[in-house]
Length: 235
Image 1 (cartoon, rainbow, N blue to C red):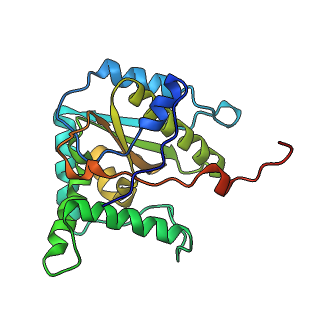
Image 2 (cartoon, one colour):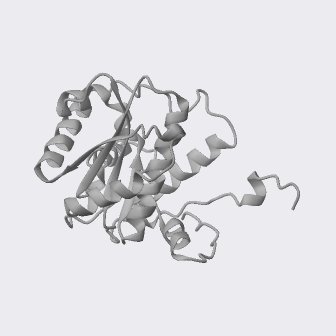
């Protein structure tokens, strides 16, 4: 059973939203109005960016367009149309301590889902991947895009945009899951949604209300305390 992360006491509403944010992998079908999603994106657009470049672009999907897209993407994945991300997310090979952290969350999640390493388990793992390509059942799926000519500074900006969006959603009682899996299917996504070649698919994000009955949502990840990764001087 995964260990719960050490508790940090929230001292205000902003911290409460940050500390209660988790990556949710099972959502209720409850619709989210466009006005709510657009408001959250307007809030997220206040994230800092180098020289105010605001490099983010978002495709927001719901209803029939979302269902059509995710069904098409699952079909493409089953047919082997998986060309991999256009930019590497992880170094190869991955090294410590990062490889151990990645393995732990993988085994913790698979344990909750009842996925082992025995015969027939690949079908369960494949079902989980296909569930992720459907935004884990969320009523809203976002795809984050950026012009491929941009450099690493803009990627930092995109990260701050995503975090701001996730915290803003949590403050309204919504849950999210940032999802790198969509970057692994750029060709299919371009075909299904008409994304221009100049725009790189960075990641996706699911938005909705948590399905408390979903086994995956019992996952609680650890966090290394500040004293372990910080060096304090002059204090």
